[in-house]
Length: 511
Image (cartoon, rainbow, N blue to C red; front, side, top):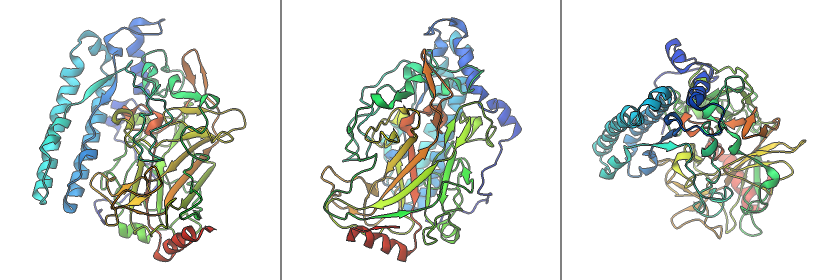
């Protein structure tokens, strides 16, 4: 892989957007509060507004990247860049959506003619470039990609079925159930669930009351997990290896994504926590990762483990309050560091595991699952003392003395050849229902990450939530809990990886 070389930046992401851009976005997330105010001013005092401005909550665009499989290796850097530009187009269109509510109220065709139509044209141009880059590199582009250019407006009251507790991709094939029930569409700031300018300042960008659930109302043992983690089983490779990499004490934050958007500044449009490798940004090559320092106690583990930060939307001004990826894109409030970050590798129920190749990349979960659906969703939320109760599409309200828990069980079947793939998924797979890997795949150590947070329980009453917490997200994803995700690049040295495999296959618990 080794892609990188444009500019270098300091690992601590303190980049600020240009003054004009910050002003355009309102700074500190104020744009989102203004959206709420303008969307409701025509019908104050009612739980549901009937103005045209309130009818479209967000923008729903087909995920072009997930449809790409036959992309030659030498074209992937350029294609990833085009996909990142497509993400920026959606962000820009969403900004226009939330700042033109008066115009929308006066013209029923405004959203289609002034936002969605032009967005389709711009996406079509990028899709044409992607097809050309694939063809030039010797691949064969799918002509059907053109059908993915058009986006739709997601209505505020659109509901989708599902129990919100299955279909998380952590057991079996990850396809069952859509995990979208109660997705907050009725309370996304359009239906009495939004905030006003006197509280968290995030308005209709969420989260909202419908995004939260009392942990006691979650059914226990509904997802086949033990304490939120996939069980090893009594046969196969039953050992484990735990690596201690801290909780980001070094304050390594940025809004890049080296896996999905290499070479693209702010490719994630939300801020990540990083533990392990200390040289992870959009411009890091494999060589940079191999030569970097690590926060892991075992210095042989230079792997990078990263996830979107959680924020408490209490009106606090964080270091990135006016930055892209932060407040300028609706990610507002105080960043919450985990009280614990437990990282371990476990085995396979059916047999031994083999070593992961160096620089293997794995993304689990889907940052766009609110609009993409559940196919790659893999979120898991719970509370300490209640970890037999796991939920995918709600943030848990934990009782006094209990902490919020997010867990991630990564795909653990490798195709035996590739360290990455065009859509960053096809080279990995989840185990099947019986714990075995699909044909053509072999078992590698399964990465499991458990993050524990001290968070004051939000107050939810009368259809509103005060001082909510939320995962950082792409702006149009409205901070829905189902968009939680986790990323990993293996940079263990060969001796340590062999030790991990030996511990797991011999049934030992090592660290």
